[in-house]
Figure: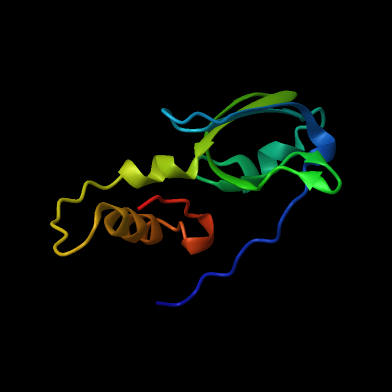
Length: 128
C-alpha cells in the first residue's frame, strides 16, 4: 500500500463567525460551524467536502482544549456557510463486522477495536 500524501493544514480561524461543539457521552459529538464566505472562495476548495476530516480546538493561548477530530457531514449556505461535522467515531459504524474474541478481557477487546479505528493508545481512556 502506497502512503497517500497528507494535505497541508489550513487555519480558517479568521473566517469563523460561530462555533458550537457538543461533547455528549451518549451520542456522537457534533460540531456546528459558521464560516464567512462573502467572496465565495470556500466553494473552490475541498476543505468542507462531505467526509473531510477536520481537527478542531478552541480556547486561549496556553489553555487550549484537546484537539478533536470530526468528519464533515453537511454544508449549507452561500455567503455564510454552516458546516455540520460529527465526531470521528461516526465512521466506526459504516462497516458491520461480526467476529469472536477469545481469551481477551472486555477492555482488551475495546482497545483492539479502538486501535483498528484510528484511536491509538494516546487517545484511549479505557477502564479494565
